[in-house]
Each structure stands twice: as C-alpha cells, then as structure tokens.
Image (cartoon, rainbow, N blue to C red):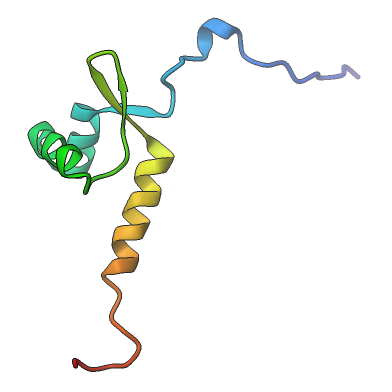
Length: 83
C-alpha cells in the first residue's frame, strides 16, 4: 500500500490575483458596466476595491459580503407597517 502525502501546488500555479476580479470581470458578472462600477467607487457606494497601479480589482469574498449587506438592507422591518 502506498502512502499519499499532501503537497502544495507549485508557486507558479498560484496567481497573486487569484480570488480577485477586474472591474470589467465584476461588471460582467453583475450585469453592470465598468463605468457604473467606477461611478460607484467615486461615490463610495459599491463593493470595496483596491487600486493596483492603474488597475482596480475587487476581492471576490468582499464583493459577496457587500451583496449580503445589500440584501440585508432590503429586508422589511419587523413592525409590519409604515410610520
């Protein structure tokens, strides 16, 4: 019987930006234009982003967290009526 050992993938197989999306990639996934995301960035209303040189990138988990926050804001109040 042979023993299997766990080995990490070679460093070349791991990209520094794995788990990050460009503005265009995120826009395509959300059905938004890159200019909308840029406008949201300026207004600080969209998902958090990071500037890498001239490139803007979004961490996938941060975008998911932001989406969950947007969903939570849309939940109706428990009082059941308007005031």
